Image (cartoon, rainbow, N blue to C red; front, side, top):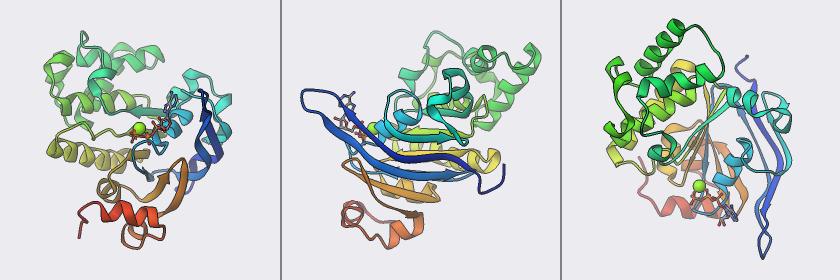
Length: 253
Ligand SMILES: Nc1ncnc2c1ncn2[C@@H]1O[C@H](COP(=O)(O)OP(=O)(O)OP(=O)(O)O)[C@@H](O)[C@H]1O
Ligand SMILES: [Mg+2]
């Protein structure tokens, strides 16, 4: 893949949840994520960030077009899609089977996708533990013997096992203690540098998004009101919603 290859393209995507009142949650969303890029999606609670992530992940339907590696998302079957796009969510405990050991969980995507021999799979699990900043003794640990930060590292490891082109992180550090969250952010940056995995990083915190991301899209009531280089969005926001978001947080110098 060349540096400027598009990993994800979202074109005129809209979505409404059908209820008593049909409410438009996404309104004509457009953006692209390039290979190796960390793209931040920021906005207040309820602005539609997770809905957009869920559309990309194939969890919900939408109008418009989502292209993953140039191919329509709706033309992927679940198995193919899971090789291209993976996600990490806010609560690692909810994503992991507490009865299983770390080694078993990390190996599972390889078993399901019939990748490699047993010894190759064990080697890949060891490599992944090193990448996510844990040593191989963790293989024998059960999930309920890990801290929140360690569990989130395992979720990230599982997500990267099939070497997806795109990793979606939806509020992946929001539930963690500030210092632990900062370590996970560092891990995302390091993994992006080492593996060149593109990321859609979702957060309500502009400081965090600015620190991690190359480009940022600002979302308000289902619309992207502003999108651009992180530096520009953070230091010279044009839209009043972005300005309001920025004025509500202590700014990094
Ligand atoms: N399954 C659903 N059915 C009906 N409405 C929903 C559903 N999921 C989300 N919504 C509504 O869609 C809107 C966008 O929700 P979404 O979860 O995408 O926001 P968000 O930006 O991820 O918020 P947060 O920062 O709190 O995670 C909200 O008004 C929410 O109430
Ligand atoms: Mg959300």
